[in-house]
Image (cartoon, rainbow, N blue to C red):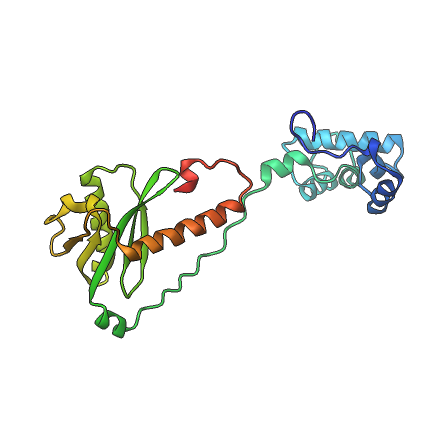
Length: 244
């Protein structure tokens, strides 16, 4: 690594074996590509690239057609010079930078599987457990439905009671939108002030120093998966946006 943090390979310090390996792989250079061309040919190739630049970087095929048809007045290059330019210098860098576009992303295939009616019939009334999970100090509202076992998590930028109640209502609407009824929400003491504010959903608050068991296990699983993924990333610190 250089003093500026750039990884490089110093060929001057390579041993005999490394030199042999490098020679076997034949690193292609412009100097090697010039072999077989005279100094006059190389000069005409450079002029060909200059002419193409002055004309706004047309494609190689378009430039060849213009030269063949005499569309360029007093053109100092030939078709052979244009082809030799590609042979020596490769594709024109300015053209690649200006004309290369992002490839179209593959179309997203949506394959929704409708849940059987039996699942809706047997789980029409849903019991929900909710709790706050903190990751690096960032709060997330996590919910899990008993029997259905659907887990949701939402980042909470503010932990005020109105914001927290809005987050709980959004978690409940996930089930209501599918025709299910959340009859009970099991929470700990920090949600106690929401009693009577969640419509038909009854709020079951645990006793002091007690926790809702199922949601605690789910939060532990989420944190374990997060730590596992975190260990594969090449970063020592993660910004809050990446965690969210």
